[in-house]
Image (cartoon, rainbow, N blue to C red; front, side, top):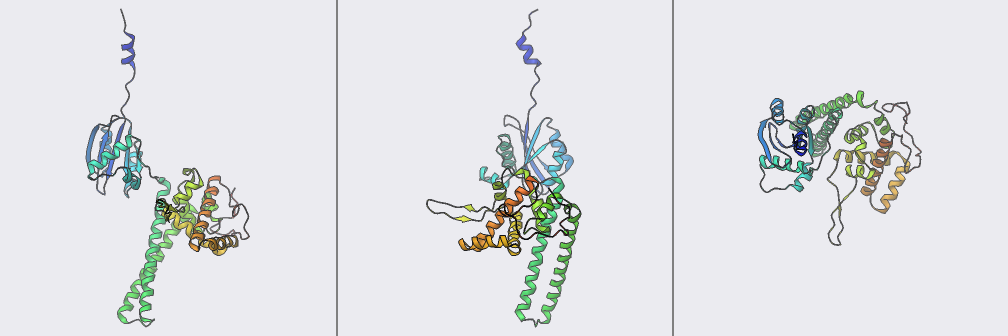
Length: 351
């Protein structure tokens, strides 16, 4: 009997499992999902209530390898954890850069979710960083603390304003306002301290935190912010990329022969705040940094000088964390003032 070997090979080869790509337009109480296959054809689309079982039912109705994408909005934590725990990769799209490549005059949930799916299939999604689960809560604690500090500052400014209006001789109607503002100020202070103390047991013993604490200008809270906002220095392949992420490199706005520099809005604003604060303290307490600051200020101006110091500190942090080495000095030269070995700096040396 004659056997057609080509037909045997054709039917004996396992069929490739189709890959699915889902774009998710996420809202506070529901999400609109559009799924396409390898060819780009829509295989399913549906609006679903933000319920774990219903979302999983949608994805389980399409067996096989699956990728999904959602914009980096506030509510992505639960969706990421749900899908990742069920072996579905969720990619976080950078909202700003995504808008630049997928602008549409007509915006609906159906169009947005399908656009996300198509860009995912083509490998064109500009990815945003997803903070690790173990650091997520700690980082958000520090961010909430910062907001409370800002609100307490606003409260203090209102108090100063009332006193300034009457030169200390405050009438009765305003005394009640002062009492309320002082109570609010004290409440904020207590909450800020409680948030700080909740982080101590986890972060103080951390080796990377201890390395940061020995760098000039970096105190406990600044070290907490830097460590948590970085979420792993290995994700930056050079100090230049890290400094840029910290918003310490000015953006350019050049046209023809006109050259203009402006503050960058790309990157992490919390790291910029942290390094800017560290630069002020380094100049204030360390002679070598003060001399460098004065030299830079004579050439340009004080804001530029502080920005350069902040950039230098960011580079130091990059190499200290990347190489797991202690702080060695400014531009390779040791500094005259060393931090004392007292809490929160632990006595045991780090290598």
